[in-house]
Image (cartoon, rainbow, N blue to C red):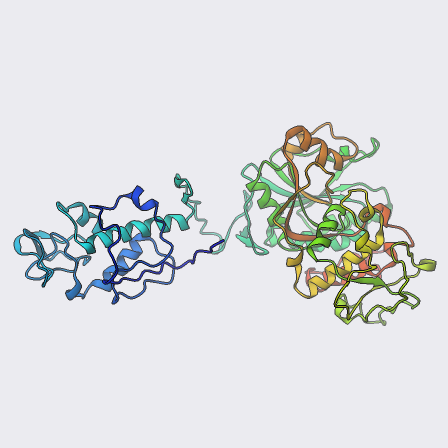
Length: 551
């Protein structure tokens, strides 16, 4: 698609043919069919106008400056001549004689009779014309109309079908720095662009709240850093975060209390879990709040994620639920594979795990890893680490073709309960691929605009939903994922879609967990170290190695 420049390049050439020479006076509708995207030929000696976008009034002023002393090329503007022609666009009150005859071909001036005052506004001068305009008059008049149209188009006020009603301008909040704006009804100033996304909130959303289904301190201690980073008080979009307590484990509850004490914008909802399933988790939902619902094992959130899904929901209210671009979500895993985002990794075998030395920590970057070595007949998809052995995954280096051969991702399926859900080996390869893409600044490999699941079961590990849509879905089935991703889209005709504008990492499904599965990798430690180095402003509230949280 052609990308229009932000500049308004205008170049004048006297030798060029007249624009719309046969018309007596250019009209608005006549010009609207000729959108101005290029250069206008009128006069060689006129300099290019400003490289910045111009309003019509700014363009007029620049034309005035360019023509002020051009006595040999003055325009035949009736009412702007004396013994010689006055500058057509000169803002002056000098008495000028009104033309009583056609201009001389040699002097380009009118004969002198009568006086009037030169108008500082060319539009007024044009309106005063009684007879056919000169060639230069027509060109200037057309130029002004085209500049006006171009400016309106740049401001989004014109579309394919013609004029639109000018939207009301947003009030300027002089209490917020330039490039930021008030976040809803809060006192926070939030950047207008976050993570490369010029964001927009749904008109009906008075608040944007995180909604965390809490159960495990091992992963939430990592997620905590991303949540605080995305609070409105810190330049993000979340007005606050709600933790739904869905555990009775004493150690995890103790950590939750420490978490709540660490941040005033955190709160807890106590959930009745006697009913089974997840339906009771939505009992306190409010209609006018946009909820960003997250699983408690989200361990990476790109800065663009929340602004992107919030904006997509704002611009497309026809979507019932909007998911983020989730690493380790079965259907999206299949998409990532086909986008070329997955890299070749295999588990290190027959070697002890090289634990960091005392006083040092793990390096999360895959570039420091050695290349994988193993037998040609190694079957990874059914392999489990022996004797609860901790291990790492290594890149397969040096391949120029068939780079993914024999790696787990080839087994993934476009199926919510397929191998991408069951096999932890596929998840491990996806996580290590993400680390490589983060290190190489290559997250664009995961990008897509939107993906409509067409009533297939979409995962809801990280989604944006309006509270009124959740409340209208009640009673909610115990299987809330199927209810929101399939049942309600079928009932309402509003689909569940994924927004590809930002990446999040979902650590594991229950089927991928276990003592001889993904927990035996160093993946979680790598996410922890990355967050400590790149995301967290303060030390993590819980660390399994340093034992900062007393068990």
